[in-house]
Length: 220
Picture 1 (cartoon, rainbow, N blue to C red):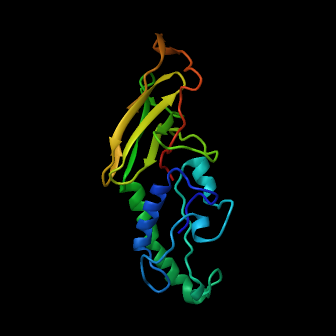
Picture 2 (cartoon, helix red, strand yellow):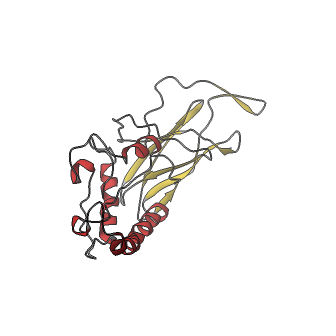
Picture 3 (cartoon, helix red, strand yellow):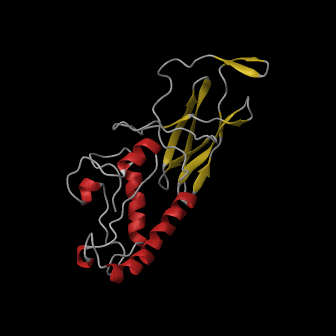
């Protein structure tokens, strides 16, 4: 079970591994046994690499991608006998699909909507920054989507300090501890500047005031 990065450690390594180990606990191998998969990035479980196909969607979109090698060398490796292994392999992967759906919808996470009080609606493009989460491989900033929604994956018992920021708005910071399931956290950012005819005559936020970002919304 492979996750990013192939060329080093992602800052969210502990969350990646926590999810992968949960998957390993329910996913059967070719002998029908669970807990037998190797778990790690491509360099951990394969060989030295400069990266893998899982790196791009994480770096650019903030998704949590996983690659599962579904058959062992004993089953034919990369080219298992189709008639023998196709149906049983597909059935076995249903456990993975169910695990990911449950983890995304009901697992530990912080999610919500960033709102604009002037428009009384969502605020897209707000930067979502998790304290202590450092991007070192050119990852894109994590932002709220076109509906103002955001999504931060987490581990049970983890305390997150999240800052929401957007040009023309005062940043807002919230600290929250995540339990077994999702935490819904909506945030309204207040405009900077005077109100003119019901609209904000915004003043630019000084350069460098918006810190680097973390997880994006969880839409798949």
